[in-house]
Structure formats: structure tokens, C-alpha cells
Amino acid sequence: MILHIDMDAFYASVEQRDNPSLLGIPIVVGGSAKGRGVVAAASYEARRYGVYSAMPMKTALERCGQLVVVPVQMDLYASISRQIREIFHRYTPLVEPLSLDEAFLDVTGCQALFGSAVEIGREIQQAILAELGLNASVGVAPNKFLAKVASGHAKPRGFTVVEPAKVHDFLDPLSIDKIWGVGKRAEARLGQLGIYRVADLRHADLDQLTRTMGRSSANHLYALAWGRDDRAVVPDREAKSISHETTFHTDVSDSEVLQAILLRLTEQVGRRLRRHDRYCSTVTLKLRFSDFQTLARSATLASSSNSTNTLWETVRDTLLPRIRIDQPVRLVGMGVSSLANSRTRQLGLFDDNDGRDSQVDQATDSILDRFGKNAIRRGTTLES
Image (cartoon, rainbow, N blue to C red; front, side, top):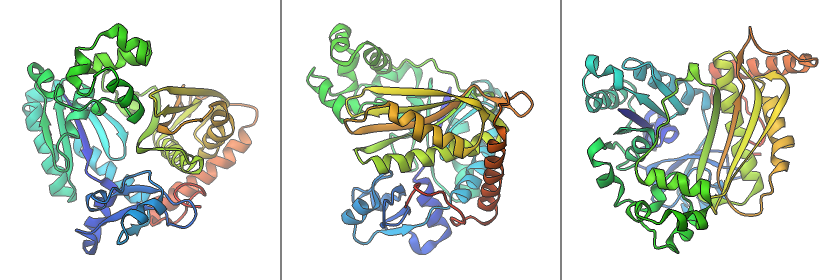
């Protein structure tokens, strides 16, 4: 059985935990409203006003006049994330982090030691609350897709179990947008086929679905509607690639907002590479548009690197220009692959520059780890 554990409004909840005066009021974590500020996280109080992550700060403030904006403390969130993962590893070595605030856990081989998957999930949820003062939602299911849908089923503080014999009972009533990757445009196209619920998709004519959505998307949607997902949980240390992505609550057309989010994702990937002494040779950019079309572009580096500057220059100057963005974007992601450690990495002719970048990264990481509170920040991330 697989667990998907998702922290509830993670960044905002950390700020409310550490500053009780913020409890019960709408807050967002992110850049200021000046320039191109972006919401990194929104409390549940703010979400009631229609404020969500990745939203321009100006829009968020227009929707909620009493909104409190709190600066990002990424080092603090990363530190707490490590504490959360330490709790996970008490129960299983098979932990696949998706971001700082969510992860998959495969507890199939641990149930003889710690009890059923449900018992393990309950213990982890309670341990996070007792030790860290934070709430998490948990999904327990036979595979990763079902576990992720389940964890979001009853947020916050949710705990949802999908038994193998009741997969269809769980999925069938759900609206079609609960399927991974179904945005507003895809939802509208499926609606033209009379598909509004997962049950409708499960019983749809696959040929007709293929003509409307394309073969790859149709097969993907059809498999998920039947609850099929054979992907394994891949622990961080065994991963052949590292990536971060985010799905926007509202499709985004603003190129500066897209770049700000992409830079934030690139910084996360870079720090993760360095934390695990990994270097990459391939950088990949992924965009999913409002019509469900997904495009990915990759570039091979002259020599392997874990420099945030190198990664960002590759994304911004090489990969972004290769994708024509002529419609709103639903999802954006950045990843790296062809990983090696410091002993096996391939060196290039121009590693002096990369070495200087490495010194900058090490200094930046050290400052963030030591001082926090936005002690240092690259331009264009959450404000400019």
C-alpha cells in the first residue's frame, strides 16, 4: 500500500504556528505587491477569498483587502521538511519526496513491523502534529495516483483510505478535474463528450476519446479512470532524475509570473542536487497548456553541473525560447537527469566558471541555512 502525505498549507501554516497573531486571519507567503510579487502559499483563511498559490500578489490583494503578506523563509521550510522526512523514515526507507511539503511512502513491506498501512498513516499524521505542531492530510491507497487523490479528498487534516476492492466506488463520483492534468480546457472538451465524472470517463468510448484528446492523453486519462497506476515509489537517493513542478489553480498567461515560478523551481532543484552531492547533464523544461497539451524540451550541458545559475540560464535562454507559448499555461515544471556524484561526474573544458558558480551556491546555501528570513534572494523569484 502507498501513502501520500501532503502538508496542509505548509508555508502559511509554519508562519501561523510561529506567530500566533497570524492564526485565524488570511495570510499569504510570498513577495510584496510591488513589481511582480507572486503568492508562494495561502492560508485556508485566504483561500476562502479565492486566493491561491502562484497568483500574482496584486490580484490576491484585490481579492482580499485585509490580506497579510509574510516574507518567504525557504530555509525554515526546508529545515522543517527534513524533520518531517525523518518521521517518514522511522517507518519505511521507501520515501519519494515530491516537494518540501508532500511525499509518497511505500509501506507494503513494513506492515509486519508497524501494523497496517492505515495504522502507519495515522501514527505519522499524529507524530507530525505532536512533534512539529503542523497538520497533514494522508491518502492511503493501492497506488500513487489513488493515494494522491485521496490525500486531497478531505483537506485539511484529512485521512482517506481507498481499499483495493473499492477503487471504483471512490473514483466514480469525483468530478473529472480530479484526474491529474485535467484543466479547464480539457474539462470543457471532455464535457462535449458528456464526460463530467470519473465514472463517465471510465465508461467512455476509447476511440472517441482518442479522437478528441489525442492517443497519449486518452490512454493516460482512461487508465487513471480505472484506477491504474503502476509507477513505483522511488527514494530520493535512488532517483535517476530530480524535478519540481506546480499546477496553477488558475491558468497563467503572464510571462513574468511564469519565469518567477520557474526560477523558484530551479532553485529548489539546484539545492536538492547539492544536498545529495549530485550533478546533472540534462535539463528539462515542461509546460502543460490549458487544452491539456504538454510540451517538454531538454538540453544537454557541456559538462555536468549542480549550479543554480547554470540550470537557470539553460531554462531561460535555451529551453524557454524553444516553446511557443500562445495560450494560458496550466502546469510548469523543471527537472534534471543523467545524474552523477562528485566522483563520477563528467568534467568539461570550462569548469572554472562552474566552480565560481559553485562557490556562490555554497555561500548562498550557507547564508540561507544560517540566517533565513530572506537573508539572500535571487532576482525575479517572488518579487523584482
